[in-house]
Image 1 (tube, rainbow, N blue to C red):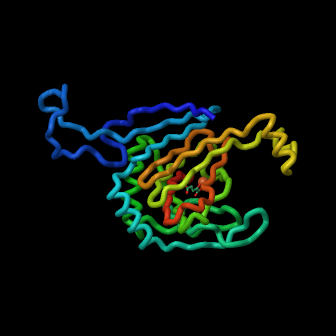
Image 2 (image 1 turned 30 degrees about the horizontal axis):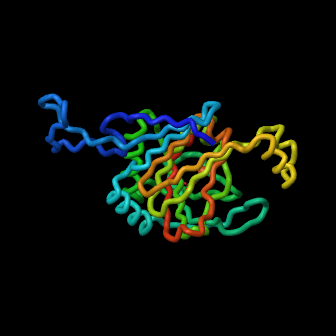
Image 3 (image 1 turned 60 degrees about the vertical axis):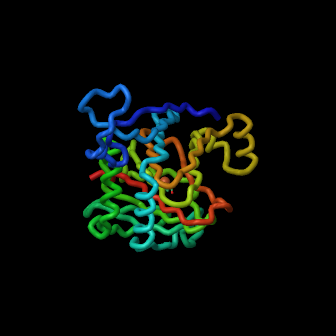
Length: 261
Ligand SMILES: O=C(O)CCC(=O)C(=O)O
Ligand SMILES: [Fe+2]
């Protein structure tokens, strides 16, 4: 479906935490004497999903080399774990590695029957650097936790879900930074109450598809990209990172969240 896409210019010099280099002295055409040249800010694409839900995508949030430096550091130093979780009643290893970092004293994060042990930011200076870049790119935002996921191959994935736990409040902002292998990130509209009541079987799904094709949006999340979900996105939409046979290398994703205190 056609997406309602807006391209907007970000706050100059703040995106990605990469403020203009004070040493840059060349003047662009039309620039006034004494005015420092600013590097082009990364392009932002804003997709209005309707009903007060919005996604902001910054494909080149982090410069390539810096992003590889961060990838290597995260890959090597994070104590990755693959815990058992319960999906549709079945207990099994989560189909990706994870780690959770949060401010001290916050409400615990529980999902799919698993309680994530929170590490401290002080253990991982690299995460503080990435958090700083995210805060500078999103003035007014405040994140106090991050869930890290590592997808080792294209068989690793995250299934359809919404990050709609009560600890994030009714309209959470979630900032997702990706490194390494590019993967599709797909959003689909949650079924309405009457659709859900019409059944969950294959026949009901087909009936619904004919009556109203499910709204869906897909974003290719590249190395060094940022994607922000805002407003009612967690209430009204689900998201997933599907398996991809062709994805042969590791991807690391960080979702920064604000746990209400
Ligand atoms: O890996 C991603 O892009 C998304 C991860 C995600 O949705 C989650 O951790 O809740
Ligand atoms: Fe999620």
